[in-house]
Image (cartoon, rainbow, N blue to C red; front, side, top):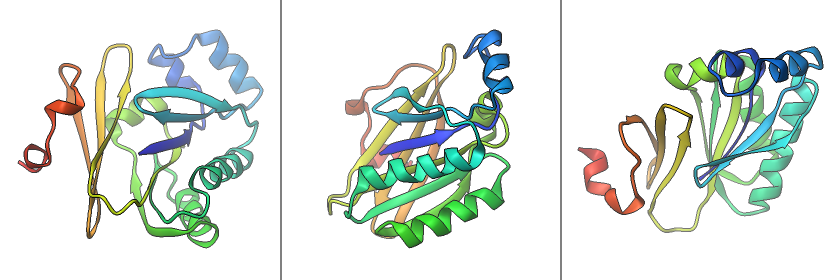
Length: 178
């Protein structure tokens, strides 16, 4: 599972200690909406668009480049931006070969660190194999696990606060459902 997302404001990242206050001030002054990706538990900055519309355009272009023409499943998430999220959903459905698109809200616990206005697309290509795909978001003090489980009838999303790091070998399909 891959995640591409951007935040609307840098002030919440600064308040939670994720970025320096000076960087948040400069980024806000320049109206930067950092476009980031999360892959295999590692966050990486992809681009620094200077408007919300450019960030949405670059996010969709990045997703299109990653999935190519392969059928994929998508989870479009937002933090208090349902109108932008539904626009992204319709764009993804019209421009990308998708078997399923789910629209949902970013969790309040994680949204505390990113603030309102976050938009993101989590996706994976369908390979016909039912697998449990994990990615972890590690902040400096809190560990979150966002799990997407591929089922014949679609995605199931689980978000869990972790008290300790987990290994992929610690998890099986059976204990995720219990």
